[in-house]
Image (cartoon, rainbow, N blue to C red):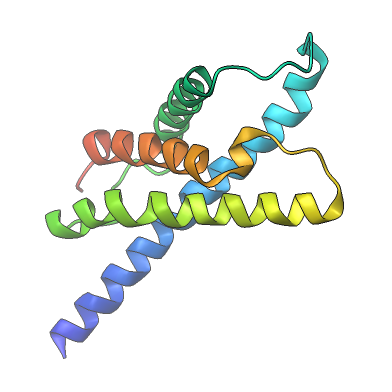
Length: 137
């Protein structure tokens, strides 16, 4: 029975970390769309490497900001914390690509964060900051 309870708590913790990352990605996307558009000089695409670096930096900043709100690590077990580094960024990237597909069907403009790989990089950077700096309570 204890093993089942631990498994349920681990899955709930994983879900909590995923939700935290997706919420911060959606907020970043909203901020990017609303604040960045007025400063855009041209419609020329930027370098994918530069965009990846930018989203990685934004993800690390989001991870730091999330520590101000949620300073304790949701997952306490070391194996669960490492699994979180692998699983939640992938799921978060999937969520962002699904949101991008939804926006595409509606005819909305897409930004790079609406793609799987950029969503993964953002979420991975955020998860790494939380992994290394969250209090274990």
